[in-house]
Image (cartoon, rainbow, N blue to C red; front, side, top):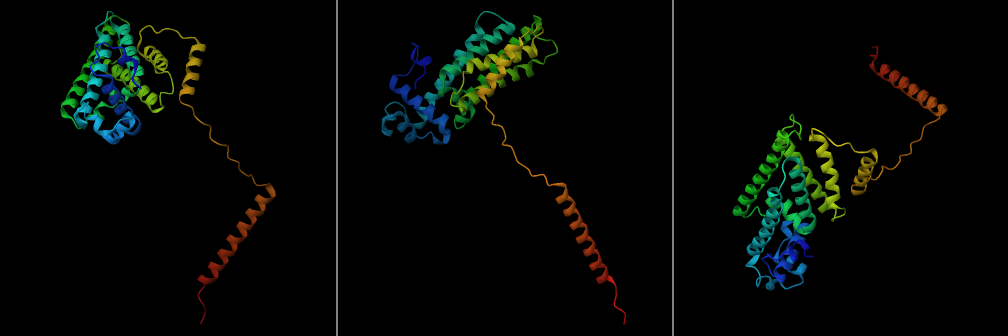
Length: 270
């Protein structure tokens, strides 16, 4: 399935046929991993013959170049939120929400964003660009947090680097669980809960949540990550008479063993 984020973009550089092949490749990557991303598997997923891929891309390298173009395009769209009006914690919230919204809209392509280092590890040029992009993202998050500290919105005793790592890690881990669940829950809704947790942790003036909203948050979390109760284990408690009888038998056997050992240890008289 081709996400709407691409089909409605007038500047999208690929034809429908190319986009269908890229979408098939991203689906194979998500479901079976990078090692399974062969031309044969991708062609089968796209519903075309293997030679047909060469009409759109120059082999595997050309196809992975197309996938990397998708990675860059989504990252650029998400980063553009940092250029919008606002500052501090408000900009941090809007930019994080943009990133999560892009991941939710991208679906299979979101796997490429979250696992770019692993997917493109065989392409040094792509790896260098990914590292540079990650560094820019961290710098943007840090700038927003420092603005919030100066404005008195964020606690002054918060370490900006730790706060940025906490927020980014929360987004990535939640998105990873969302992908592994087969898109089994509303990623944007869950991020709203995670953002509330982050804001309560760092905000100098945290908003007061009602007990009902906290309870509903816990109920949603339980629905996203269900846990089955452990089965009850039945144990038999012996009766008092049986316990006493077993104890006596044990004492008798122990005494009998002691006497036997004593007889063997006594030397025979000549």
